[in-house]
Length: 370
Image (cartoon, rainbow, N blue to C red; front, top):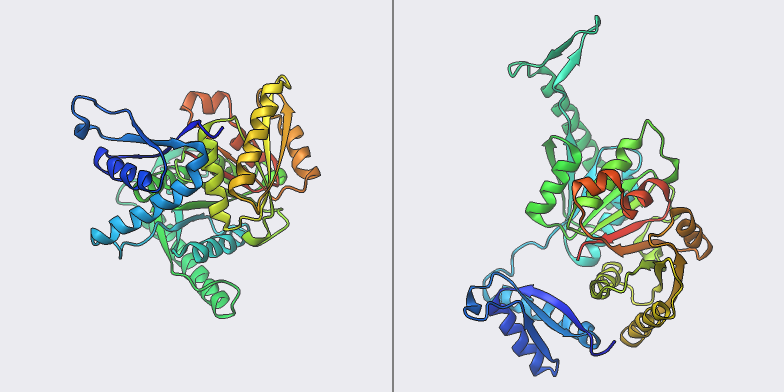
């Protein structure tokens, strides 16, 4: 695996050349791909590629390089991307708040709450006649906004009291209120502001017809969002990120999985995790076991405090009951994997693993989109 090339970053040609120069000064062989060979300076984005064995060192170097660039460009005061917590003021918000504030403390950023209220376009009268609200009819909208502002004020007071009691770390937080469809507004916010992490609640196995909307919104965001998403079931047995000790990571032996796993470790801020690498396949081929064992050896070398295990389960796609049973038997605290963005047709007629796990599992789910 050591000589396999992986994509470290995609940057402009000028910045890619600067990264290449610095990495090679540290003895890391670097290759730039996808160039317009005749006019490389006109390329919108090029790939900076390195050997797989150099990935952890290179990630740290690039992070330091980009911090220095920000300082040189007078951007050192720019706020870090926030932790985004979409809310609906339901009984599952508490866990999202606990995790959101703790992650914000760990990564030195703020918490942004996003509340999306919906204004109906139609009303049904007592004689079953359907009528449309006119633009001038603002009383209903006024009531909805007033109620939303009251909920925000109550939650603000509750959070401040918890901070004063030491139950939550003292980090900045604020609220945004938007009118529209929840998943659309959440995805729009993520596209515009690129939050560091999106934290959402799920109902897990106890989902019913009356509360199915909450889980489906989370599942839709995971399927379509390009930012990391952490889905927290109501029935999970812990309340703090530090309680996450065992992480299962689904891998397809893709080079992007290495970066995704590194992102998972950095998010949790704990290099002493126990990570179970899981690969789903219809045939238990020797080649699969060799590659999965190589991944295990790779992380054992670069993260010596990390305990790595691996498992091959049957099926081209992970079977939800089989996977859930494995997670329960191994006492897994969180399931993580790198998702591939799919089109609307695929999501409607062949729901992805994230969608199924959100609706039918009590295990927290961390999904990256690298």
